[in-house]
Amino acid sequence: MLISCIILPQGLAASTDQQSSSTPEHLASEHSVDGDGSTFDPDEMEEDEPFDLMNFLNTYFGKAERNTMTGSDALNRTENTSVIVPPTDDEVFVMVLGNESFTLNLLSLQCIIALDQNDQTNLRSTAEKLHDLALDLQEQVEPLDVEDHNIGRKQVFLESMDTFIEVTRPLKDGSPEFVAERRVAYASLTHAVELLDNAVRNINCMVASERPDTMALHSAPEVDWPDDIRQAGMPFVYYDSTRSNEISLSPQYARKIQKFYYEEQTGLETKTRHIHAPEGSSYIQVYLIIAHRGNLDGKKYTIQTPPLSAFTLHGPEGSYSPLTTERFTSLGEMYTQKSLDRRESSQSSLLFEVPDTLTTDTVYLSVNLGSTDGTISWNFK
Image 1: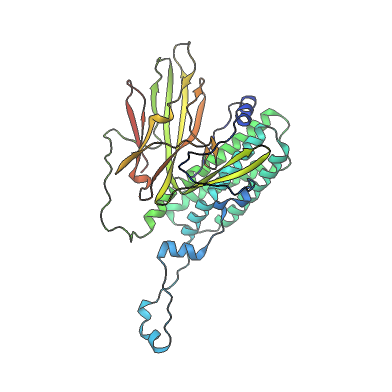
Image 2: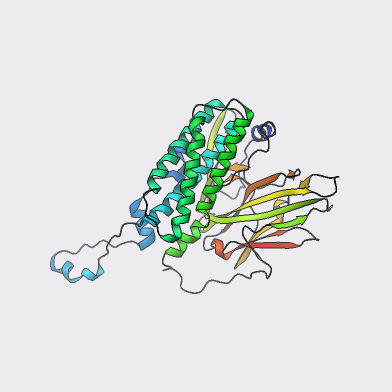
């Protein structure tokens, strides 16, 4: 996923300082950056490239060789010709999800920030773009006659679009006057994003399973799964080091991506930086939720989330540490260690650079919680 993932501010006043005080910096030097100097405009984002039918067909069915024979030669060699089969409704649906989820997540994040800062100009512009995109996608997807295994995914996606449309319709006229109304609006945006996340969850695995594996010449190495591994979405509840507070940690899903981008502020100029995976590599994004479930002793109410170094992604042939990135990217908020007060939660993403041959169902995530709880692991099958 995306998808993609958003941390909502716990309160408008506090989150305003959080958003406005950070100045994006470059990613780690080993990742290439496109310094094209373009303005950060979702309409120009590379993930929004129009659907290319021929590339789609080539990807799914293999490239057809051009038949240059004529006359009787062509008649005698008809068994070598290729028939172009149009994509099914299911394949079109999957492509819509893959192409548009990044933009929907990014526009949602921009709307939330504009609401939080009561930025009337940016809110009107971004809300209009999000409203129009959701309306267009709703019209594209609604008539698609998908198979049974995609019916639920389609319904969740359409519900997400309905929510986007409803919440952005009044926001096109600007930010609500009262704080309570703004909180309702960004709560609705969060709900729409959660629905979208559910719709696109494991979409890369689904596509890969439907494509014929013409490249595999031998069996891939097997993953050495831990005996006590958990399924993604299953929370692990533990106590902090003082045993004063209860914490819940839950990786929700993983997805494979090739690129992402972020906004960079240089003086008064805003630029968009596009980060592409190096040749032979991909990125795996892991969406994570950590929650402070409550205090037990009435004394210390604050907990620290695990450090970034506590997380490791494991594959058949090696292990991978999370990348250090900008705090906010097109994937949503990226994971950093932070303090959480009682009943507060954090939603963010870990990002790993892995060999392009890996898939999300052949890796697992571990987190080292120290001597008391040890290492806990989750898979993404």
